[in-house]
Image (tube, rainbow, N blue to C red; front, side, top):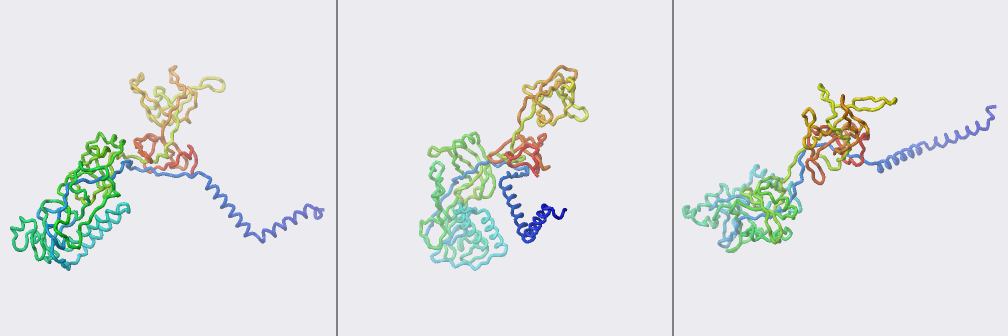
Length: 492
């Protein structure tokens, strides 16, 4: 009987044991399966090649080299005519006319004027501080002092030191230039007296700087290779609250708008720039550009670029060293990573064997082959043509048209196919291949070869032509790491 079958009893006991085990430990089993699933996925993730996508953009190819330049200009350090406490009137980094008031000397400290800044003045100062903060880098800490001088000058100006108040600490420019008692004589003197101050005036037009660094009164012929060492560069602040003595340095005045920038060059850079007489320079301090006269000179046997400017000095009057970029290449186009580039082989077919549809313009070829019975048959193939290359020496066919070589998709033909012309014995055997450069486009989720023509490149990116047949357009998505992909791979 069925109830006495020993196999039935064994099956009943086994299923009962399974129910008891899983009934009591179902949570453990579920957790175990979950961790196993997560572990398998983690292993697959770590062992699978990850494909990165890149969106094609239209942008310039930045490959201009950067340099650190030494500024040479006409400047003179001016000494105090007498001793005393200094009260500064000219704003640093601004132009001043001859006979303009630069500073005042007094036997005692001049009391500070009780002036307050307007909300508009405070907003201007905040903007200056914000702009400096955005561009500041720890490696250019010397710029902090230049900004300090500039900010002090701004505050003095906003506070009315060169404004309309007439306290001893805040004279008007008219008072400082003309003097209180003898205006006519004051216009011809280097100093005037007002109250308890002797006002010193500029002897020439120029830009006032309240610092010195030892490069003043030096021409390009005096410069040595050691002068380009920024680590040993030192600037001395001439502003002081302590009394000065007659003959002490009190300010520097830049007297000419013409200035030069010297940049060290390697032999390779010197050769590359040797034919240039003018060059466009981008100043990294403020991202402004300016054109200057260019020449290659030698200093201590080493090659340097000399760039002469006739304007723009006031923007960099407090700088001795400037980081610049020589704008020698600004090629613009579709920008792609070099890692996206691949090459693909294509069959090449001469245009003399083409058939062109007069209505659609489609190009086709007649392939001659034998069927299963050995009979010669023909079929028309309309391939995708990825590139057209004009033949050398402009060879023309019987119709007087130029001949070309077509790069056709190798999926349309097989090696050894015979291409023929109607009513002609001419035949071309498919076999020769040439390579085209391209990328894998993944707009549709799988890798499709798209041809590109590189016009320029640097170490990371390439610029390619726009409107290339079967090429790329802006915002296409391509594979960044093309070495990990094969054509027609499904990626997502």
